[in-house]
Length: 67
View (cartoon, rainbow, N blue to C red):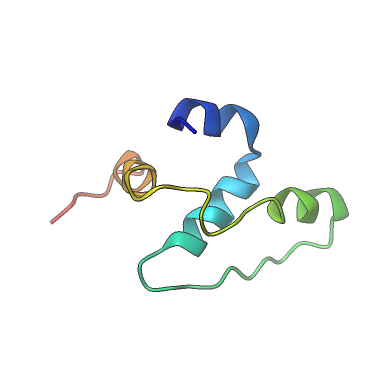
């Protein structure tokens, strides 16, 4: 799946949760919503949604610098 296709087919909430799940520190996502629709969108996320390249592209897009 290409980076562009990924953004078109998945909700922003799922992208955020997938980014956290793919973090090198093996973090867990803790969602703080009671809205069933929003929770459903977050549940679309899986740890293998993002490739390593996509994860780092989002990291750099957010203004971070790779050391």
